[in-house]
Length: 120
Length: 116
Image (cartoon, rainbow over all chains, first blue to last red; front, top):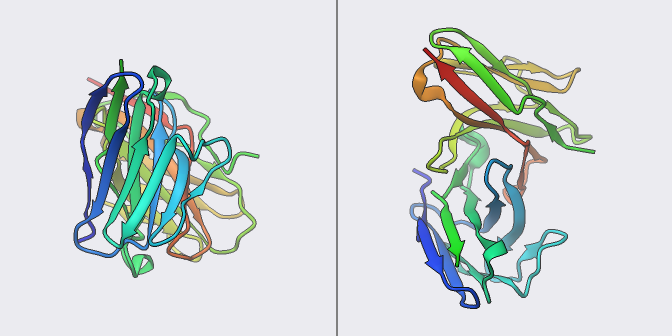
C-alpha cells in the first residue's frame, strides 16, 4: 500500500510554454502533498506544501506565480510550471504521507517517481 | 543552521565491505523521525530505514542499520556487505513533530561508489 503515481516521468518543452506535472495517491487519501525540486547532484529542496482544498504554502524564494500548485482532491495534486525557461530545467518530485503513517515502518512517507523537466 | 548535515560528498567502498555514511541533525523538537533514502541515477527515492526519536533500539533493515546516538544528534547509516548495486546517492532526512503534514528536510547527500 501507499503508492504515489507521478506523470510524466520526462518532459521536454519549449521556452515560454507551461508544463503540468501530476501526482496521484493511488490507495490512500493524501491530505497533504509535498513538492520538491532537485538540481543535478544536489539535495531535494522543498518548494511547497499543498493541502487539499486550500492554497499551497510556498517556501521562501519560490515564485508562487511561476509554480502553480493545485490540490483539488484528496488523491490529486498538480504542479504547473508556467512560462518555463531553461533555468527551470530540473527534477521535480512529489511526496505524501499516508494516514496512520507513524505506524508504518517507513513512517508513511511515499514518493512519486519524479519528473525530469528539460526546457529548450 | 543546517537541520541535516552530511559531511561526506563522496565515499568509496570495496564490494563485500561495510561502510558508514554520516548524518548529524539539529532540532529542538523532542519528537522527530530520521530517515535514510537511496537515490539511484533513475531518480526514484528508495526508503531504506527509519528511526523515531523515542525508539530505544537502533533500527535495522536487512543489510542496513542506523547507528542512532541521540545525545550526539547523529544518525549514521551502516551498510554491511556492500554490493555493486549499492552505488547510488544516499540522503539522510528528518521529520520534526508528529503531524501528518510535516515535511521532510534532506541533507546534501553522499554519493557512494562500490568497487570490485
